[in-house]
Structures are given as structure tokens and as C-alpha cells.
Length: 390
Image (tube, rainbow, N blue to C red):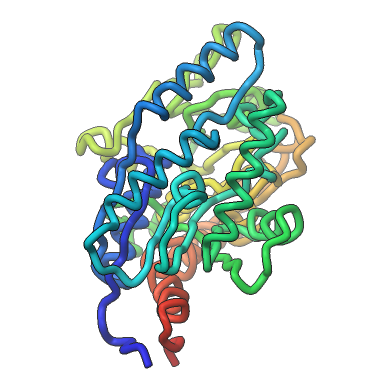
């Protein structure tokens, strides 16, 4: 029987830099920290880079330039074969209990190993295909290879780990994966310093409704709808202001009460504090996403007791629970509907304060990396031969 008290030796097989807080929106970094804290000793096998990867990237750019078509360069067979070979070399001569591969389908698809593998993703290729712009309008051969790499990776992995039911359901229904190997564990907030609970619960709404939109892609994050919401709130008699952080809107979107912060780097302490100040001073996080696999930003907002107003698409339901830490509106909703909901919440002190409290509680009970790490520890112990904790 496996000793459940012994720390596991975890081979962390990430295609991106596991030490960077920008890799996979910081998830790669914070996921590794949670594994180290709660599951065992993490040994980094990534990032994996190769000439094949660079060639595939250049091929992708050329194809899009010439034919206005996409290929998913990280899911091409010749890249996956090379990365599996590199991973196998890095595993040679070392002893591990388990391989943990965040967004590592391409790295494990051709990997030959006797070690159990956990693949952590926020979406399947099937759910991304014709949903995300980068996975739409694909050349047929790239589409075929994308599905092949996905299917091979899913057969290699003993566990598929997702943050939302949307992604997990796709693995089971679209990809034919046995539901017993699919687990849903919400990701946490990517924060180095969590604000004190007392400070969060003491926050009061501002005298002008402050909306905050955080995201690097104006169109995908629903920037146009956020702008409509600002205009409509004014028509409803609600003084409001909108801060855009992370993207620059087109020239047609200009307003005297809209502030644009092109980017903030969390690895820079001063800029990180500026972002935290935005979270603390805003009244609502407004991100009417058009495509979203999950949304770490909603977890971060919840840590600050900041209610999220968003759309019901993709995996957002894994991070935003209606009436608890925000609301998900219909995908077809526009600025009128968003503004009316925000106005109703903003003008009802009791309702708003309750939402602040329940948003923080959602973070404390569910949307944090400690909770994720403890849940994943049980899963890892099962697949390496141990028993679940009592």
C-alpha cells in the first residue's frame, strides 16, 4: 500500500515556462506552487522548446498571411513527436511517482512511459474548435492532426483535470473519454498577496459606479458591450466610469469617463499593486466575454469581494456562480441588459453588500489554489496506488 504521508515526486511537464507568471495567464506557475505546497516535490521538465516548434509557428504565420487560414501549430504531429522525445530524455535516469502536464497534450501524445500521467487543461481541442478564433477557420490537415494529438494524449493520461463542467463534459461527450478519469477542480486566483478578509468585507461601493474590465483581447473580452454598458448607465441616471486594463480599444471607443491602462505586469511589484488597487476600488468587474475557457480574472476579483458581471459562455460557469460572486448574462445580451442589472445591484445597498461578502466566501471556499492543491493531492494518491484521505 502506498504511504499517503510520503511526499510525491512530481515531474512537471509544461510546454511553457513554469517560472513565469505570464505562462498560461500565470496558471502554470501557480499550479506548480500549489502542487509543491500540498502534493509533493515538483521537478520541472519544462519549458520545452524546439526548432520544430519555431518552424510550426512560422508556418502558422505564413499560412494565415497567404491564405487567411489557421493552423494550431502546437498540435501538429511533427511538433508533438519532437516534444515527446525531449520529455523522454529529461525523464531518463530519474525516479518519479507521477507526471503532471499542464496544457501538455502535445508533450504526452507520443510519450512512452510507465508513469501515470495527469493532463490539466481548461478546454478540449474539440470545445475550442470553431469557438476560439485561433482554432477556427483551420486548414483541414491541421484540424485532423489537432484531433489526433488530442485523442492520443487522452489515451495516455490516467487523469484529465479541468476547472469547469463545460470542459469536462466536452472530454466525455465530444471525445469519448471514460468519465471516471475526468475530474473537475476549479482553478484559483493568481495572487501572491491575498487581501485581508476584514478589509474586503469593509469595502463600500463608491459614489460613482466604477466598472473594471481586465483582459488582453478587447474583442474576445466583449469590450464593445462593456462600452455600451457605460453609455446606457448614464442614460439610466447612474454616474459611472469604466477602466480598461490590459487592452487598447479601437479609436472609435472613446469617452471622458473611460480610462485605458494598456498593460500591467504582475511580476513588477509596483504594477501588481496598481492592479490590486483597481480590484479594491472597483464596484463591478465587467467582462462580457465572447469566448472564455474559464477566467482566472473572476477568481481574482472574488478574492477582493468584487462581483463579476459576465456572459454565460464556455467555462465561465466554473468560476462565476449566479447570485454568489456575480452574474452570467445570456450570450446575446448587450449593453442595455448589462446596465440594467448593474443599476439594480448598485442602487440596492443590502443586495450589493451581500454580494461582496458571498464573492469573498466563494474565493475562500472554492476559487483558491490551496483548495485546488488539496483536492488534487487526493487524486494523485489514488493513481499512484494509495487511498484517498479520510
